[in-house]
Length: 325
Image (cartoon, rainbow, N blue to C red; front, side, top):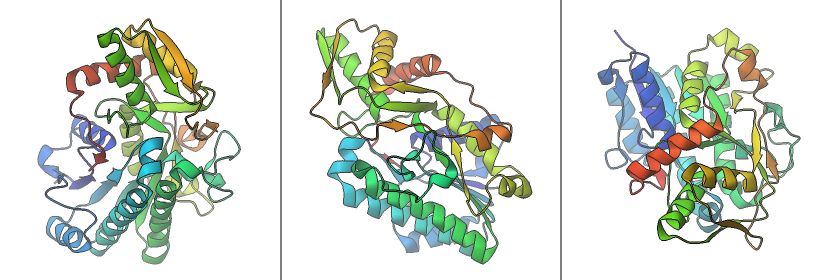
C-alpha cells in the first residue's frame, strides 16, 4: 500500500511542483492528499486538527505560506507574520498529534542575516539582524525551523526543513505589485512589448546580486531530502540544525537579470533604474554544499528556466495567486 502524502499548499508554485514530481515518480493520485484554502483554512487550529485526525497522512510537505515581494512584505507585515506563524504551528502540531513521523517544512533564504557572510551557510542562522523589508516573514520562517527542531528533540519525530533560494517558474504569482522580481519583470516587459512602450523602469540600483532556482528543481530537491535515510540527513545537519539549503550556486545582478528577461521576451526598449525604490539585501547567495555532498544538484539553467516561465505566463497570466495555499 502506498504511503499517504499530504501536500499543504498544492495550488502554490512550490506545492504544485511537488505534486507533479510525486506523480512523475509513480505515486498514485489517490495517495496524494490536497485541500484548497476554501476546503481547509490552515490558520484555524480546530479545522487542521480535524483534518489530520480524519486523513492520517504518513508524510507531510508543508509548502503552504503567504508569500510576496518587497512591496507586499512592506505593506502587509502583520498579515505575513500572523498567517505564516499560524499555518506552520497548526500543521506541525497536528501532524505530530496524528502520528505523522516525517514532515518537510519549506522555508526561505530570507531567514539569514542581511549581512551574512556569502555564500550563506546553514549555521549563519540567528547570527545578525535580518533584512528589514521582510523581517516579519523571515521571523515566521525561522519559527517554522525551530518548531521542527523542537518537535524532533521532544517527541522523536523526523521533521526536516529546506531553505530554498529565490524560486521562479510555472505557477508563479504575476500580481503587478505583490510578486517577486522575476514574475514582476516578466509581466512588466511583456506589457511594455504589447503596448510598444519604449522604456521600462526596474526598482532600485540594479546592483543587488540574487540567486534563482527553477521550482521544478526545488520540488526534486524537496522529495530527495524527504526521502534521505534519517542517519544520513542528521549527519549532514549537525550539530543541532534541522534545515538544509537548496540553491543553484549561481548569482546574477538585478540589472543583468532584467536584460536577460527582456532578451527572452524579445523586448527591445530601454531599461531604466528607479533608484528611489528600495534594493533589499545587497547580496543573497546560498551555500548549498551540504545538499550537493549528498548527491543532489539542479538541472535547469536560468536561460532555459526563464523561457519556461514566460511560456507559463503567456498561457496563464490571469491565474496568479497572492496566497500559495
